[in-house]
Length: 482
Image (tube, rainbow, N blue to C red; front, side):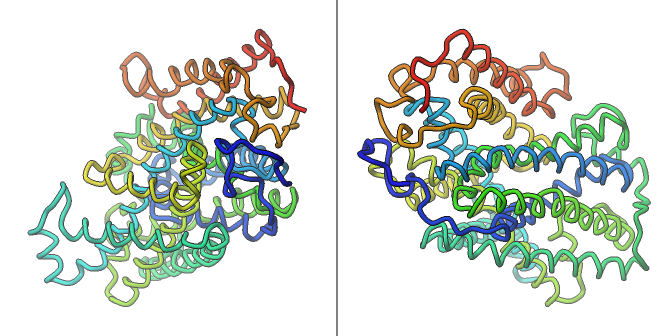
């Protein structure tokens, strides 16, 4: 679609509707292989495995969570495929042409945090490999800067810089990279799992991890009850769904390039429930085998590969996981803020500059490392921020606008989405009310029970969407999208 006479303050070539739409189901599928097959994804899956108490419980909880993820991604993906616009532009329909900068910047800031977390995970795999050398281990122990060892800092900066090379030629380079990086980590995962099962004396679904160890490893998860209880399984499913909170918002950044709706659905089917369950299955088997071989619970794959006798196998595993983690960073944490920052200042910030800003913020965050600590807590705290935004966008698109968006008006200052001087007060109120319950109360006070934070994202989606629906009834649009 060609936009006629767009406002310069709302338009540039990167924010315009996608002109070339040739991403098939395989490319959509590899969005998810790139997003899931990372060190953080493995770490989270292994951590959640302990909370389930048994392999069967783990598959049930992850399976149910994966079906929810699949359904939500389809809802967002269909909107992107139909309109062809990126997330911050689609948000203009519900937040207003200027109000959309609020959800765009929230998503961008979250991406910066995740960008740093994933970069740290990838560089950690390289550190684990290099410290097999006694000389480098000595340097690692003796040199410290900015709250980290000198080796950790060097590896972080190098990995951080390598990611910038991937996006030099825009989204098509991203697609080609993810088409290669996603499947590559499957090979490494299977080699890791098979090798450990052979060392353990065979394949087993019986984890054999003592209850005392499970309780110790899950003590800080904020879940009532013991591992394997109903509460624990609910928390596992909720955390797994919340892990994808950021991509629910901006999956349209990728689905906008899809050939058709069928490509989105098929790519999501194989990339989400099928791929997620299989990935979690391999992570669980690897955790079981590693415990039997080494006598300890190892939640990080680079910790396992560091114990390999073969230096070559350790290098292969570490580098593959590092590359896969770069894949998720480019897909989930570079593309989104690139569009989000460009949306705020389209005349001066394009796709590349927006991505560079996000990468720069992640570099500044490194000395503080806000992502270190409990996986479930980090995922919950970050994800809950975006719950109300998703609830508002879905309610507006499917229940109020009935799936119809005036794409031309998304780029007009005085069009159908001007609302009150470019801001939709209904969306702002709903965001504020939803954020109080999803983010502010559970994360900054002790008024809520400990488990509230685990379900913060769900609470935000429900309250944000419900308040927006009520506000839309009380204060309907003065001009309807056409």
